[in-house]
Amino acid sequence: MELRRLRADLHIHTCLSPCGELAMSPRAVVEGARAARLDLIAVTDHNTMENAAAVIAAARGTGLAVLPGIELTTVEEVHILGLFDAEADVRPFQEEVFRNLPDIPAKRKYVDDQVLVDAEDYVTGFSPRCLFGATLLSVHEAVGLIHAHGGLAIASHIDRESFSVVSQLGFIPEGLGLEAVELSPHADIAGAREAYGIAPDLAVVRFSDAHKPDEIGAAPTDFLVAAPTLAEIRLALAGEAGRKAFSS
Amino acid sequence: MTLNELATRLELKVFTSGIPPDRPVQGGYASDLLSDVIGHARKDDLWVTLQVHPNIVAVAVLKELAGIVLVGGRVPAEETLAQAVREKVPVLGTGLTTFELAGRLYGMGLRGG
Image (cartoon, rainbow over all chains, first blue to last red; front, side, top):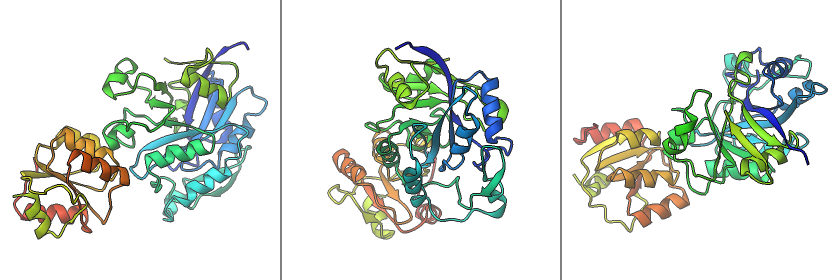
């Protein structure tokens, strides 16, 4: 099978994330991704995947591939990305996450910032949950839950001073089973393995963590893969079957 | 002051019952960011936190802390307790919040860095 080098940004928020701009509608995300010459993106809102289907639908026919994803907040306040197959039924996973999200209603002004939309950018509702809150899942349980539902688990922005596995837990716990760790756009990739104690066999990627349209694609990772699918990304992160990940 | 005296006076629960709590406590540190504890806690500090992940034991060993007190009625994760016993790191607990416990420790003469 012929391998191609695809450009990916697998950490993008939409207007559903309380911190994501309202401008991050499905169409705007797709346009932004195409303008940044991305081949593959993932939608990763905080503790929810409710806008992912709309972005997948908005990208249909554009040549852009979209994976449904999530950015889980663990009980230690560590952010973990979960990425899933575009065809996967993510509802059971989502239900499990919501079961573990304490039932604290969001304040009105935050509810207004948690916008549910359809593929045409129409507002369909607002999430009443406190999406930015921590779930009751430990990092190990979060990674286990993502894996149990067929997903890839990537520790978010481990160079950051908040919400990163390193800031919260001091170092990356042994045996956590991550597929990769993510660095922020401005992090020093060359020194990262030593600075953050990243095991030699653990892949390092870099994504934008975009909350605004002009941040999309700010720090892409290229993947040498046969297709823009979760299975291929999994091989690339593991460095198997000739697939590779390149963080620029 | 020893850990034992503090535990008795503050009615702390001792999770690591096999470890003699006669270690001297020189000061205190309260933080839930383990990276911050690695950076700023001092040897023989008593560490007050709500984190229960096994990594707290490794941090206590690294920094040679006198012990860990979990606040708010939290209990150590199973693996945390196993590692604490293995590494001989005393892990205690209280129903008090971080603010309340730190205030009482300060009142008993302990100081931060």
